[in-house]
Length: 115
Image (cartoon, rainbow, N blue to C red; front, side, top):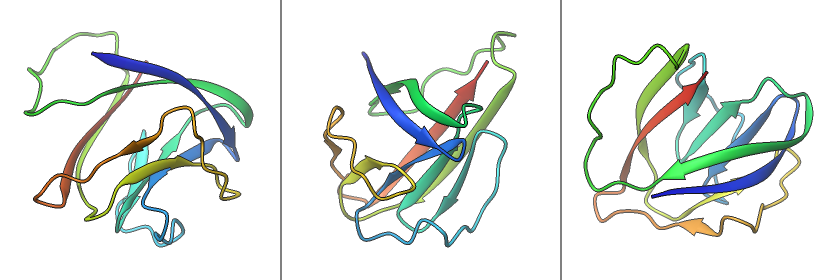
């Protein structure tokens, strides 16, 4: 089930990160998001203001769709042994979504889609 919420983007992005993560220490770069240890920085296309975001929490990878509705797709495995929060670049935690608890493996599979 998709959970929808609004995130305040700044500088065209927002983060899904462990509170202790250094969200400037990028390790991989993509067209939808960039990653580092315990964080993902999503690119929004909106310079500043609210962005509507949907998150699905799945126990296994979803079926792949050849749908043409998505222009950009990024996938990554994120190492994060502690819970993740939605955080702005200025460090403000977005309370609307709460936190995503880390799985016992300490690894999240992330797929970002943007039309």
